[in-house]
Length: 385
Picture 1: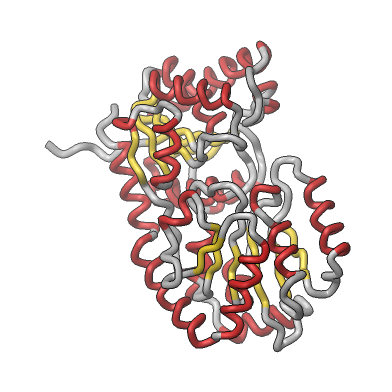
Picture 2 (picture 1 turned 30 degrees about the horizontal axis):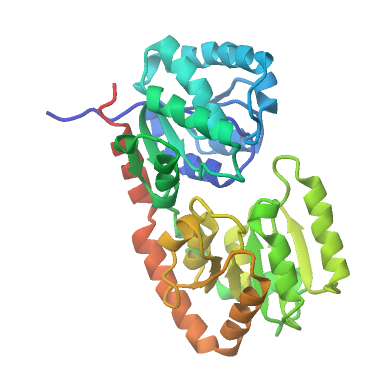
């Protein structure tokens, strides 16, 4: 008997374009007419989905929007808002076989909507459920709800899956599906474009250039890279990203740190950019420096696809991507001296760095393909109706 392809209603609480949203964008695009996306916040993500021809609508959150990962207990207003939003989401579910939540807030709403609409619910888990990211109360509530109401948990790495299970989650629910990334945008960038971009950014032609990409947040480790730069004279850095969820104070602190360390002229804060493949090809090295375990590490795969050697923090899902000394370099999280030494080692051995980059590119194309991710998600959602 052939199992029918799932028709999925994807739900995400965010309107911004973070890593989770970029992965969902690719999955929903591949699903085509079998997919609809409901966003609980409007923003650039909606526009990106519309540009891909994905059916998308917005059901705005109210009080539930104020509940954070560190929140111990939601307010009565937040609980009432969950029911209100869930009723509206349930109306979208009638033509779909399964609801798939792309975040924790979305999962709470999806569970309530699934009960109303009589549809199974899947949680695409993209977070490591452990402190300091989540409060103990938040973790217990999320795992309990998942054990009771989730038909399946799709984890974006083994590390994410293990954290869920360690927190009391049912192992039988879990399927691991690594994120996959389309190499085409990276393949389309030539060296001439990269050289021209470096000139436009004001980076000296012969300067050694490292680059870091991601949301501005202390756990992403931009401050670690700045400390490392103070130990490696003449190295320049592109820091690409912006506060996504109210981290403006951290943004200001980073710029003050750069000034305090005397890095003026060597650090280029670019803000949010849509031309990530081009900027990666402009750099000599891609740096990932998260101080806490990363659920996956999308930027690492992107750096590999750009044909650049990658230095990454040894924790979480990262160790499922990087083979230390072969397809990249792993360093201790939060250790700016180790990061500085890794940068210096790659700068001192350009031939070895280039060979590592080529091995990394082949590894990323083979192990983290877009097709494998879409197939994995589709298989995980199949047969649940």
